[in-house]
Structure formats: C-alpha cells, structure tokens
Length: 102
Image (tube, rainbow, N blue to C red; front, side, top):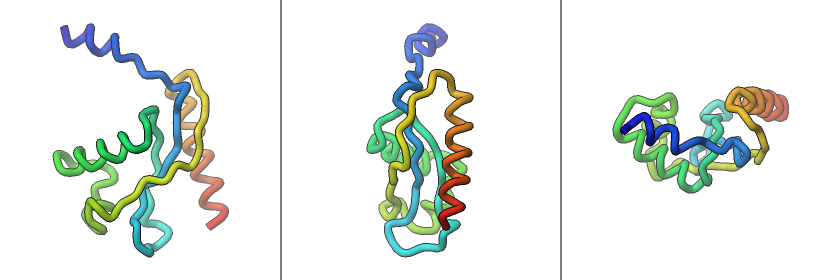
C-alpha cells in the first residue's frame, strides 16, 4: 500500500524554485541556507518550521540561532527541469553566482 502511494505522488520538477532561508534581522552573510523545492514557497517555509521542531536538519542551526519566527524564505529563481539531478546543478550554479556578488 505504501509503495503505491509513493508512486502516485510523483514530483513535477517543471515548477522548481531555488530559494534561501535567512534571518529577518541584520545578519552575517554566511547565515543563509540555500535550497530548492517544487512546492509553493509559503508551503515550504511551513514545512521547514514543522521539520525543525521534530528532527535534526541541515538548517536547524539557523532556526536555533535566530528563532523559528525570525526566519524568512526568499525566492531566488524559478526554473524548468525534468529530473532531480538537474535541480542540484542549477542550485550549485546559483549559489556560485550569489557568492560572487557578495
């Protein structure tokens, strides 16, 4: 039964987004978490907040340092890809471009 549910929830990578999580207040440049999603941005931020309360995540340090209500999500780029592997490449390239500007 579980296997059928997983297959029926195929991810549509055509609506991919690159975003950052950052504090709402002034912060050091390195206090940013980069990621990507296929979900609407507002839903992804809600999921981050729920996950942060439940488990040890790669972005937990940011919520712990600034507080769960003091983190915002900022859309960097929309893009169209077919497979997940391409998302990782686009994310990596976007991070490089952003870091060059800093």
